[in-house]
Length: 397
Ligand SMILES: Cc1cc2nc3c(=O)[nH]c(=O)nc-3n(C[C@H](O)[C@H](O)[C@H](O)COP(=O)(O)OP(=O)(O)OC[C@H]3O[C@@H](n4cnc5c(N)ncnc54)[C@H](O)[C@@H]3O)c2cc1C
Ligand code: SF4
Ligand code: SF4
Figure 1 (cartoon, rainbow, N blue to C red):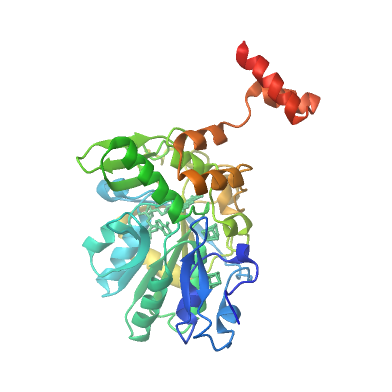
Figure 2 (cartoon, rainbow, N blue to C red):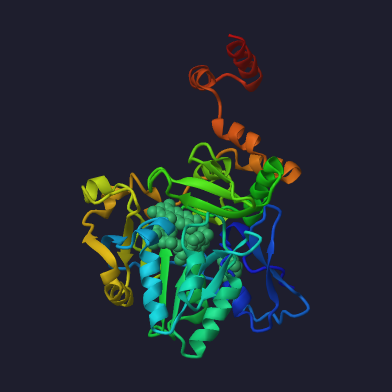
């Protein structure tokens, strides 16, 4: 009897499409020991039709698009302030809401869990703005979006490339007139359990509840973004890209989902979405004078439908062409290739299983060997025991 969908667990992106495809409702998404969601099949309900495995999009080639690249920035400074990049998502979403459509994207719930929800108006859209550096649970949203499309309601679905791929696997191309899809250049996602563990640690340390969290606060500018936790009394705890342990661990790939480090199929010109958004890191090379450090988006138009939607919201945006996307790769390697897992990933999860998120331990793992030890290792290829003694000598001096 089937227990899960993918024989090789690392292939599964956790998009949740299989759960919404199963005609018997036999699949639920359950967290594993690292906290990532995977499909679990209820043997009593499964009729072995294998539809889940046949339709699972993970690892299947995604066709290459002829992409058109633009730089863009929302004209409204408040929208840019609430967005991680240039606020293109909000411009597209407003266009779909104005047509009576529903926008799906990732938002926090009251317990600061991140899940995909549907927004029917501008107020509900606000919670979707801004990147959340944790995997969003999209399984129910995929089913919900599919049922709205079946009823003839326009939908904008925005998510990670694998989530848009999951929605496409669920609905196929039947609703092309009604469905607009938007994804982003994706660095990868940490598990919800790791983020929840970090929040618990913060609450324990400060003796107060965390009521809001921003992963891409722009108080020091778009490029030097900060992570900011807001406590119940309004106090804000801000950390930078190398000083906030959670953000640092994410950026150093310490706790990404296993599928993220082998995610080759959804990069470059290969995206299932109509539009791919990104930060225009490297703007100084391709668009000198455009970066005012309030946020600038790179927009890759993948389809004709994407082009029409972008044109329709263009009045909200300052737009310029980007001619040489390849030159951006050294600033934004995720455009073309997946991240490499940090060598201490296993050590992190071993410690996490016993102690929860431990900022001091994370910073120690990320610090790596000291400079003297690195030189010693490289030159002398010292065995571990001897290395420890060398390190002790350096520490004494
Ligand atoms: C986990 C993650 C990794 C990223 N990695 C890169 C990268 O390596 N390089 C790069 O250039 N850009 C990356 N981005 C994209 C970038 O940060 C912006 O989200 C994107 O450019 C859109 O910005 P915006 O200003 O138009 O809109 P914003 O308002 O910032 O975007 C919000 C949109 O992002 C979606 N979203 C937010 N968090 C999640 C999530 N956890 N899962 C699914 N969807 C989510 C929301 O649904 C909404 O549609 C990443 C985003 C995320 C969430
Ligand atoms: S459909 Fe998505 S969640 Fe289901 S097995 Fe495939 S990748 Fe995993
Ligand atoms: S890196 Fe790939 S598998 Fe991971 S969240 Fe992004 S699109 Fe999905």
